[in-house]
Amino acid sequence: MRMEESGRLPFSERLIVSAAEGLTILEPGSGRIMGSMRLDGACAVCCGRRAVYCAADDGAIWRIDSDHLSPTAIFSGGPGITSLCVDAREERLYALCADADSLLMCCAQSGQPLLLNRAGLNPQSMIHARAEGLIVVAGGEDEHVLVFCDKTLQLADMLPVKGIACAASLRGNMIYALSMEDAQSCLLTAAERGGKIRRIRLPGLPGMLQAEEGGVIAAAGNRLYAIDPEGSAVTKDMRMPARTGKMISFSGREGSAVILDRAAQNLYMRTGALRWSLVMTGVRDMARSFRKA
Image (cartoon, rainbow, N blue to C red; front, side, top):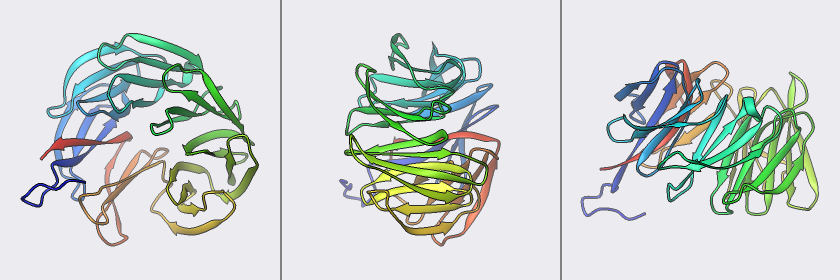
């Protein structure tokens, strides 16, 4: 990462959070409010290089200037949008419509619908594996992870799971899933595409799932687990202040991170030592935003 002569990063990181009454910009580390925008029913949110995209309960998707949190366009989305993501060039916007069991791709600039495909039964979450050119969907009651080409939305792969597929991730040739069989535990499923399937049972309800270079991070109950890349063993675990539905670490501040408990809609922030503080309630989603320093 290139540094300016002054020693500062050429951009600053901010946290955009959505709540039923609108959007708020928070400063990582301090939790200081840096701006806000009224948007009734704000839910799923993602950030591109030039804009913030936010879905609302009425099915609309708002395109918002990321510097000033002012709306620039409104698109027709779909019912029950639970997740949004945008490609690196900010050309294609993806919306997971849980109430319509579908994945929508539209133009990120105009909002024009481009492609639509069925995606499970009450799908729970979605990630964009940009390096692999794939959209990965946890298919909910369909009990599958569904992998789509990010340009055509054609189904490229499927991973069967046991129970409701709640979270999914992908890195390289490995697909990962967290599923819920009962209220006491969840299953981590890992498989090389077209290869052997491995499963690990974790106590507690499923939360986030994130594939990284050295393996996969999974949340279950109030604990966070590090698991080897093959999905065969837990290598480390730690207690968290709540069930982690989403987590973001910030590069500009050592030890600074935030987690979102989606069920309780509570946002926690950590700076430095492993001590978490509740900084906001009623939060429905969050995303990292960049701004030139």
